[in-house]
Amino acid sequence: MKIRPVNSIVIYLFATIALLCTPHLASAQGIVDNEPLLMIKIPDINRLLTDAQAMTPATPGANPVGQIQAIRIMLYGTDWIDTNRSIVIGQRKEGTKFSMIALIPFNEPNSSFENAYHPIPGGDYYLMTMPPKPGLTVSPDFEKSLVNASRTPTTRGDLVLEIAASKALTDVEPKILDSLDKAAAMQVNQPVKSPISPENIKAMVKELLNIGKQTDIFRLGLDFSQNFLTLNTDIDAMPGTELANALVDVGGSTRLANLPIDMPIRAYTRPYNIPGIMNLYGKIYQALYSQLGINLQDIDRMTKISTGESAGGFNITSEGIDMETVSALKPGTDGGSFIINEYVPFLEQYIQAFSNIAAQKTDTPATPIFVRTDDSTVAGAKVIGYKIDISSSLPPDAKFPINLKMNFRIAAVKDLMFTASNDASLAELINSTRNLVPSPASGPTGIVVIDTAAFFKGLISLMPPNVSPPPFPLDLGEIEAKFTFSNGKMESETRLDAAALNKISMAIAARAMAAKQNTAPPPAPAQ
Image (cartoon, rainbow, N blue to C red; front, side):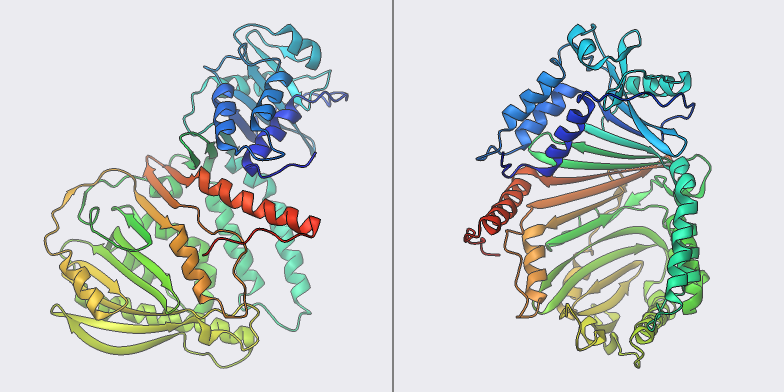
């Protein structure tokens, strides 16, 4: 049977549940007392199947109604499953092997299900392996973990993955570091060396792992409802760790929440613990900054001046990138002095350091990526300008040359710092903040909105004439992503338009089918 365009996530869903319900004869591999490192939760199987069916386009060769019905048949109906508790599938480690154990809560036993899959009854739930096999033995601790997870409500999606991050990273850390050592040994005889030393790469990975191990639970949820695909990502940090201390709601007031930014890509953050976040960032890149000669104390000093609140956006055109940003410094800060005495010297040092890295890689003199342009005065504020040309740093035979250029101008008025692509835009941006009234900070810590049609159109305009654009529509509608820091946790939510996703998947599948049949595909919509 030929499968036509179906949302790939829904296919994964079908495959997962089919695996759960496919009989497979094997013997059990014994009892292990570990708690699950990984769990998949289905809070409401009926809602999941209904939402997945609504998300999937009905096309020739694809019958979402039939696929959903087939899953219900394999489960011998779903009315017997208790949807007030989650179906939970936990990963169990057995020596060097892993297996998946499922807990299915029920309102009443299902004899047909029992005869087909031979699960272990647990009072008001079944336990079984994935795929099902007889002779299963589960330790009390592992079973208790599944029972507790099933009874713990979750609102993070139709399908939720939870990983015991600290335990998982501790388990894989030796393998990761060993792989880095092997890669470093292979580089010794390479004619072109990496501009970042293997020792520094390993140091950065170790610090990243150390911060990752401060995460108790990493959670990924998929929600298919309301004509959107929503991706929810959570980090639950271990109490008392640096990560937990960084992921807090600092409260305070906001001035930029309602600032109008007319750009295809827009972003806003309200005040947050920027020194705490930058402390983690500094730990990860400490080895690299040391190699570059950048003093972390300079970064620390500048972040302590910022509140973290900012608003801005950018637009990509064939002429380059246009941008506008406003950042709030601590009340009472002299922004003009900060730019001249702190920000600009650090920025130029930072730019020169990375230019040197590019030069080391090509073994040629560093080509200036940032060039200082003439100063000016706008709205009574001193303006410092730069011209950025990424294409100038690429070798002549670059495989994917990009004509990426940008002008940006920096100024400050009192404790607000502004950047824009030209003085006229900078003046408008400054004037738009003249009558801002502070209000209590609330809502998400940050939000990003992307007009994907404009974004991809801009990217395509930067491509050289000999590079063909993708032969399918690049329009995912408007993507909205937001994140919130609070009480040692981060919750993020990214929402995509389901119809736009299906449109692209159908176009890709049509071209793949046409290529397979050696026929002409339908023309791509105008970008």
